[in-house]
Every structure is written in C-alpha cells, then in structure tokens.
Length: 141
Image 1 (tube, helix red, strand yellow):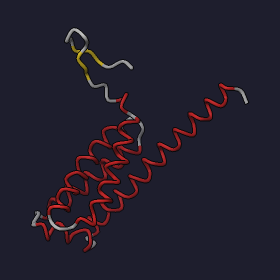
Image 2: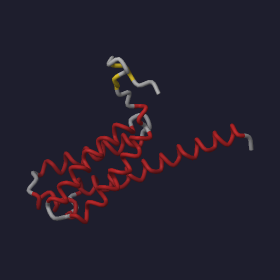
Image 3: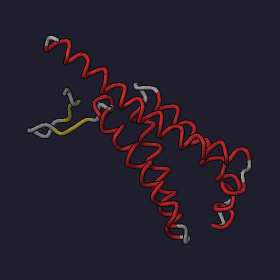
Image 4: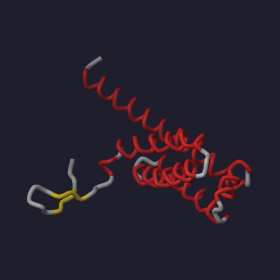
C-alpha cells in the first residue's frame, strides 16, 4: 500500500471515529431530552426537587435536541458542542449543589465528549485573534 493511500485510509478512519463520538454523545443527550418531553418521572423529578419552574424542563430539552442535532452535522458540530457544554455545566453544577453527585460523572462525560468534538472542529469557528501588532484578523490555520 502506498503512503498516499495509507494516509487517505487513516483520514477516513479518523473521520469515522469523530462521527461515532458525535453520534454517541448525541444519542445519550437526545435520550435524556425525549424522556423530559415524555414526562418520565426520573427525568422530571430533579427539576421539581430543585425548585425549577416546569418551563425549564422543556427549555433544557429543546437545547439538548438542538445541540445534539448540530453535533451530528460536521459543519455545525462546534456550535452544537458548545451548546451542550453550556447545558451540561449547568446540569453538573445543579446536580452537585443539590445532592445528586451520582449524575455528575455522566454530565462530565458529555462535557468531555462535546469538548473533544469542538476541539476537533475548532477551525470552523473562525475566531478572530490578535496579531503580533495588535490588529484583529481571522485565524487562517
């Protein structure tokens, strides 16, 4: 096998692995969101116990679904990952502060998976950075 073919095969394998990670994270999060919309007691009780209004259950579920769908689309992956990181940081903090530390490892795993996916797709973010002379310019890596 020639080096170019091996490199192409490696690129495909890496792309597939990133897609599998995105699908895994999205599946876990979508499952939690669907449980919220279906009124599964295990999904609703923490919100009620923490004293959060009912509308926050649906807002969280909508955010989880939007973030998960965005995570599955390579072009929108960094934005979906950032949205899920924000939601899961809130969930982890709330769970820990309200006596449910058993949920925090799952929150942390979703944060880690989403963070890896954001890092992998970081070139799509086009974040302006300061140049050596202090001027603003888009990152061109």
